[in-house]
Image 1 (cartoon, one colour):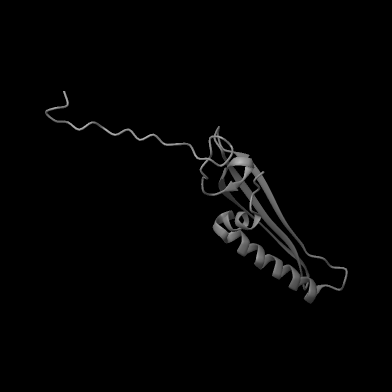
Image 2 (image 1 turned 90 degrees about the horizontal axis):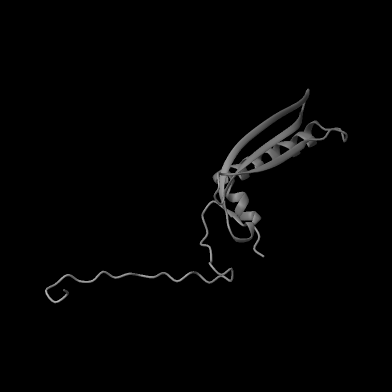
Length: 126
């Protein structure tokens, strides 16, 4: 059974911006704990994903909420950032921003395409 490639999935969320935001938040949270923590103070970083089907087709909207609570000199600071990314759902539930070609037989064999060629117009073609 095919599975969603998590590395590619994270790269595609919000066109890669979510991954950059997450890197920034993780570094900020770690620095806050080291600089302002006394061994008992903790930071918290959360990523929440919510999937909602789009109409009656094979797409979902993924709502991604990145939030953090980071220690500061006089307490904590927190932020919540929510964005959305539409994705196609392919064979086996594989999610991607691009629609993958589906196979008709479930074995990876693509359907044969029939090409109809028009008849040439001429004196002998009745």
